[in-house]
Length: 284
Ligand SMILES: *[C@@H]1O[C@H](CO)[C@@H](O)[C@H](O)[C@H]1NC(C)=O
Ligand SMILES: *[C@@H]1O[C@H](CO)[C@@H](O)[C@H](O)[C@H]1NC(C)=O
Ligand SMILES: *[C@@H]1O[C@H](CO)[C@@H](O)[C@H](O)[C@H]1NC(C)=O
Ligand SMILES: *[C@@H]1O[C@H](CO)[C@@H](O)[C@H](O)[C@H]1NC(C)=O
Ligand SMILES: *[C@@H]1O[C@H](CO)[C@@H](O)[C@H](O)[C@H]1NC(C)=O
Ligand SMILES: *[C@@H]1O[C@H](CO)[C@@H](O)[C@H](O)[C@H]1NC(C)=O
Ligand SMILES: *[C@@H]1O[C@H](CO)[C@@H](O)[C@H](O)[C@H]1NC(C)=O
Ligand SMILES: *[C@@H]1O[C@H](CO)[C@@H](O)[C@H](O)[C@H]1NC(C)=O
Image (cartoon, rainbow, N blue to C red; front, side, top):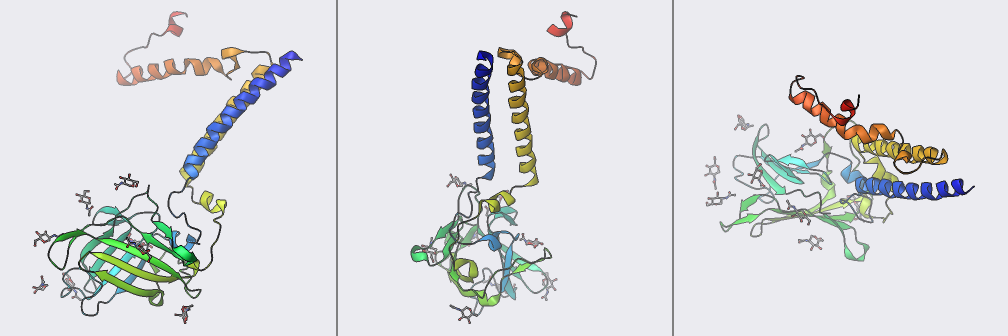
């Protein structure tokens, strides 16, 4: 009887430690820094990038020398990077003469430890402030950092539905309410209409879990299995009356593991010529 009670106590402790360990791992993998908003931004971030062409009237809205380009194309991604001028970025502007890109500008940087999403005061949608982009020359000739600030205002007509066939996700021209470029501060401010900015939702936890990569899921399964193996193994050993080191399932293997690994390294790095002489071999 006393034996059983003791086992119960120690197995509870081990299960507690195992659960904390599990929670820590699952928590660190599930924590999503990007997109903490009360609005529905799922459509925005499930696509690799959103794009629209801009035909400048009197040069407004595009960058660079426009005598060579007919229009410029905006590429914007949410919560994951796209490549621009060879760097990770959240937004890129590409000039085109209709067939070939003629210039590329990094409108925003990318930083996965910063959340660019911010709710607007008064429940009036949200805005997205990306990190600074590349260098550009102002209208006055001095250098500044390009910046992009997107505002999302409610309109139920614009769903921003991602394309089903992994094709290009194009922003409806009607969804662009305004596009302003401050030539002195190198700052873009674009206001979009978006149905997700209409109602406030409580993000479902299952959405976060859906965003885990296959690798993370395999890792979680691996650690769950490992914890279960040790927890159940220890309970069985404990009930069978084993104590101390002997509680660990297959303890001989686990305690000798460092030696096996050293042996493997010595064998590999000596190209199979040397033989490791360890304690376990001496005793044979
Ligand atoms: C823009 O490009 C055209 C054609 O290449 C050139 O003639 C013009 O001088 C350029 N303008 C500026 C401001 O660099
Ligand atoms: C666009 O530019 C490329 C390279 O500069 C040139 O080969 C092509 O003919 C141009 N196309 C048009 C439509 O101007
Ligand atoms: C990314 O953001 C974090 C937190 O604000 C900051 O500490 C870090 O320096 C940033 N990284 C870069 C490369 O800007
Ligand atoms: C892009 O990355 C390169 C190095 O890979 C760096 O030299 C360059 O300054 C970066 N450009 C921007 C705009 O950050
Ligand atoms: C800005 O202009 C200066 C002087 O004309 C030039 O040296 C520099 O390369 C320009 N910078 C960019 C980012 O175009
Ligand atoms: C970006 O836009 C929002 C709303 O339109 C505004 O509140 C915010 O101050 C802007 N951010 C910057 C850096 O201008
Ligand atoms: C939403 O957009 C549609 C189509 O552009 C427009 O007719 C309607 O007035 C807009 N609704 C609001 C509330 O702005
Ligand atoms: C944008 O996404 C499309 C696929 O939807 C991809 O082909 C394209 O290379 C992406 N553009 C950038 C700049 O990442």
